[in-house]
Structures are given as structure tokens and as C-alpha cells.
Amino acid sequence: MKQIFLASLVGAMCASPVLAAPIDPFALYTFDNGLLVDDSGNGNTGTSVGGAASLAVGASADGSNAARFGAVAGLSGIDTGIDINRSAISAITMGALVNLASLGSTPGSKILSHDNGGFDRTLGVDTRGNDTGTGFAAFTGAGVADAPGTAPLDVWAHLTVVYDGADSKLFVDGVVEATFNEATALTDSGFNLFIGTNPGFNEDFIGLLDDVFIYDRALSNAEVLDIATNGFGPIAAVPLPAGLPLLIGGFGAFAMIRKKKS
Image (cartoon, helix red, strand yellow):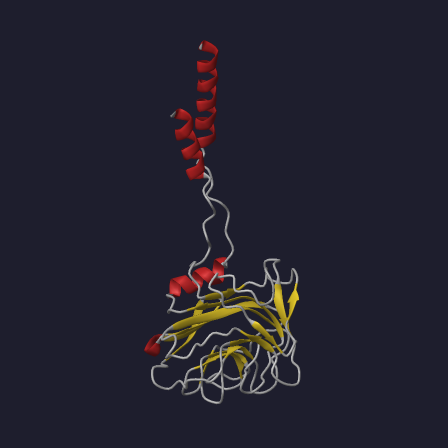
């Protein structure tokens, strides 16, 4: 029984790593297991369109794989096969780690989009909005919600947009940069969600993307900050308490004494 208790104690204290972010994404593309693989386990395998996307090994902020996108003449990106219209997913959170190599052509380039001509759920960079310059932005239905300033080049940033009716938000690095109401204005699209392009207007993203995620619910501000701060990979295992090695050693010494007496 002592051996069983000790094994259980050690197993509990050295348990499997704690996940660094909410663990129930609807789709997750880390690009560590391939360009088109959905690492959420929900089977949302992507389809390459136009051939411009490729793996960039060891290119992400944490040294893991990223996806490299380059503008070409025409539609170019990854079709996730996911319908993100409000009729299919009423509230949604989506985003990615983004490293822009270029702002793209006017009005900008799209990171996540299913735009077919209306103001659909879309995340990217855009010249339109209340702030001057080409900044990180999301379609609101009636226009563009944009973050202040021009989006930086060759710098990793974490972008998230939460579509939740009247309480919709655009985040940059886990901080709310714009709020908007999308309850009635958004247009349902005829396209699936695309990574790295706007399917209706061929506005191709130029740069690197990593950890592209979609949740079929509205994440809280704290959950968005958690993802932006910690990412999706496992963090370090739960550390052992300071006195546990002595306790284990004591059990071992006790076992040796019992063995000699027997």
C-alpha cells in the first residue's frame, strides 16, 4: 500500500502539463503538424488555394513553425471549410499571431475572411476606419473597426476579434483596441472562412501567420489575454513542492530499513 500511495503522490505532483490557453477551440492551425492540419481535433482540415502558402520552419515568435503567405495574382490562401456566418455560428472568436511583411494593396490585406462583397466577419489590415493609416482592423457590418496607428512590419503581434452582437471587440496583443455593434449589420457570406486572403476580392496577406484559432463562442477579455500571453502549447509541468524530494527520500530510506530487518 505504501508503494501505491507513493506512486500516486508522485504521479499527482508530476501530472501532465497545464495547457496555457482555453482548450476547446473549434479549429486551431499551429502549422507544426503541416500546413492544413486542424490541431483542435475537430477535423477542420484546410485546402490550399492558389499555391502561395508554405511552411516556414522555425519562423514563429516561439521558434515553432509558421505559415508563409505571399501575394499573387488572384485568390491565394487556405480554405478552412468552416462556415462562420451568423446562421451557422452565432458568436465567434478568431485570431492569429501575425507578422506582416507588407501592408498589401489599398485598402489592405485580409488575415481571416469570408468576404463576398458585404461587410462580413473579417480580420486584417485596412485603410478605412476612424484612425488614419493602414491599421489592424475588423469588419463591423456597417464599416471598419480599427486599432490606432499603422500596423507594424516585421514584428509579431497577436490579433483577436470577438463577434458577439452588441459587445464585439478587436484586440491587439490581448488589449481591447476597438469595440463595435455587429448585431444587425453583418452580411452573410457565400464563402467559407479563408486564411491569408479575402476570397471575394483577392486581397492576399503578405507575411507570416501562426496559431490561427477559431472558437464557436465569444471568449472573455481574460481568455483572450491568456491566449495572447501564453499561446496554445503546454507550459512547464506543475513544479514539485520544495519538501517533496525529502519526503520521497524518507520513504526510500524507510523501505531500505524495513528490507534489512526482514
